[in-house]
Image (cartoon, rainbow over all chains, first blue to last red):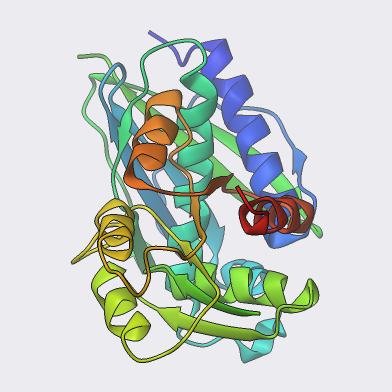
Length: 156
Length: 122
């Protein structure tokens, strides 16, 4: 099973809308990759899980520098002034992307429940998944930097 | 106009308050969840409340019910700002007593329009 085209289309639209309205920086979508790289990276991963008609999660990936830039844009402060605010900002960003995706998909199927976000920050870590999932990673370019939005869908 | 913004995300409180400031609403107060919101309303006078839905300790829905159940605050216009935007969510929020509903991600124009609509006499 692969990620349904409709789900990917809505995920891309949700991400573009969140960046346009809440980060105030446009993003340009790249080519969707069905294979999720396993790291290790020094970066930020903000994740929101969902359950119900579909089960899985949405994760936002970026470098720490880019995450600080995004947090600064959201808060209306210079990126080099961002300190402890970045994790909350990344969690809220993932929450809005997953929430917007949930709302968009609710027009076609029963609404899911989404969880509160979790944010992982660090280096030399990687994420592995069981074989019972489908995965896709969508790259976006923002001010010359690349961020990625990942969706994992359980086959169960 | 004095506005209380209730949201567990400090980022979202800052985004909402920045937006309100740009719209000319300069006196804004903050609370990190519904329980803190109830405590703030007992000590300050505000003209409107903007609240999130999903928060620890006391959710937005429980908070709105507490606002509507208090003689001193039951008249306050309440806007809900949330990602919960399925039809059932909106019905639940309206039943709890919200005056208007803003879906994240929002634009400043949406906030402006919803505030103005909530302030109009019924």
